[in-house]
Length: 452
Image 1 (spheres, helix red, strand yellow):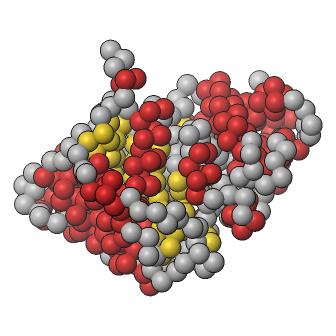
Image 2: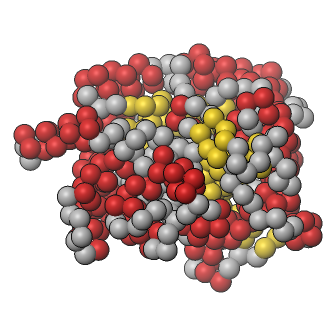
Image 3: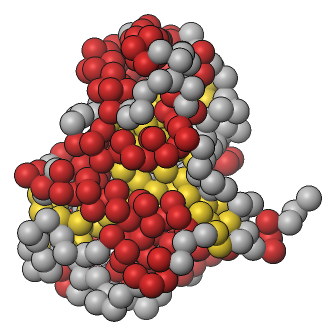
């Protein structure tokens, strides 16, 4: 039963510890929008998004006012466009990207995801057209996000796609160089992509889902940090239990918002993603949680172990709070969006290699990392390959969202603004991987893929 203590405690989380609902994301299937005529396809896509999403923003704002829970973003995810547009006469999908952007602006949302392709095992013609359109499509739009799945535990890694995505990041960086390659912040490459992720830039509405649903992504690194401050010096058993209980409370807030949004929008409730998603704000950092466990600086030896404990405890606590937990659910480590991570990079305790090690145990991967503009496409592809291998072998989602900033080098800083924050340029290993990437082909799925 809900007590006055529970109410006061939740209010404290919101007012002083940066607890928020990071996003309400409406997933919309576009499979019934398919048409061989490109203009008809675009019109169908626009009409469906604006019809289904018409009241999303108003509903989110009303719930936030009535319950006193900040809801930071309202977003839409759609069926991967490569599947929707494959039968059309469009040879380039930039017009579809513009249509998505126009629809997103019409209904007032913050981002729309799903300009995507799933190429774990190989390409269709539609997949190739989508990938060829990413750089131009993201450069000429404001709210469109893109993702490409290049591997999975079941399928292995499509190294031809990996090589291509290295080139896409480079091209997109050049096309948006006047904004310090901001376009790359709207692109992510996945291994083991999930169909119900409400967070951008990787959200898309999977084909196994229904026509429409609403999902919620909660956050709250500051709440976890505050809870750990009260048990200084306690053994890790107590740390894990404290995080579990805190994650339970955070998830219950998300459950309330998700159920209310589902009822008011009259669409099915999808999932709650209970990821600890940081922001540049003071007191809202995953790195600060790790340091509260006893590390002098995030990146010191022990960081990976601390992150593993955090990620596991968050999942366990969330699962007790809701039967609809999904998405990525755990802890994010986006460098530019986490004040503590930025400070650790500045101190020299956190480097690209340590971040890669941390991705073995967290929820996603190398996220929002600015790298020198002269980094080659092959090096970016090799970074993607390493992350995909971690995901494939460990049967977990991994991702890469790096930002090669033209004209910038180690020692420079780029400013993205808002939730994307700012980031120092992080050094990249100087040794080349070009011959490795040039091999192409497919890295086979591991033994653990044979689970039938």
